[in-house]
Image (tube, rainbow, N blue to C red):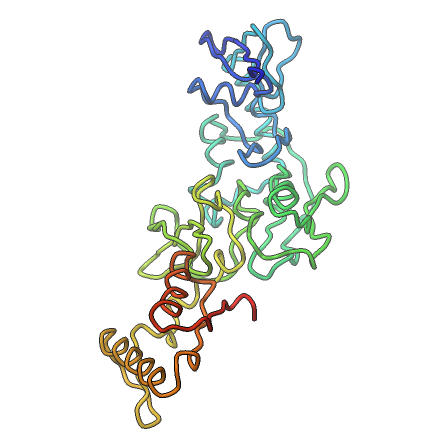
Length: 351
């Protein structure tokens, strides 16, 4: 078995050893050195559209983007200098040409990557001025997401995520130059998963499902497991004033690594439904009444025993649920085969 090639380099004077094929950005992370990024996302192929991660490499004529430049043996990298600071400030100012300063009314305020970077680089005004036509709020691929086209800075995260993570390719770049924009090109391919929304670093894409809103510092985010299937996807319920107002995820957390399907991201309205059952109910004389779990389970056990005694075990049929875990489904079939004594057991996915 051949040993994987390793490269040694210096980043800000710190010696680092990484595998061949590692980018400068990844190498800096392993050394605990932070390089500012905007378009970069751990789960996406490097896009290189923002130019904020530029670094200097000794012997190179010009600074290079750290997210797209692979390390080489014995190179020396500088991640902070007066030149790099000014280049990053100028890059941010160019990005702001395409972005209105409407932070006070933006849903993303307080957790906007662009807002954080502008604060970090102390940008108080933008010298570059360009009057761009208003793009408004075009109809998006799904009714669950609102697109604020004027806030889009063309980082291309959403397009890349739709292509690489979900494989849908429902949105893409349309036009060139100042006329370029993110647009729905194949609405029939959209699965309403919200992957584009989850990777958007600004307020260009926001939730449209609920009118309830709350700033990040007022919201309590509770990590839990999605209840819609047995995959065990991790998500965060965003609770504001005692109500769940939206669902978010953490990148890289859980088997889903931050991705969700339409049910996991938008199927939470049942939580506060007035029709939701919160306790067992038993039907007597044509009407349902509340019951305890002990009473309900005893009733079910006695009914199953009566049917088995009168008609045999094969008169009973069990149907398991995709919303249960694999372990729960296993126990359910074991109950039917080993306790009740029938192989009449199936799964709802076959319906």
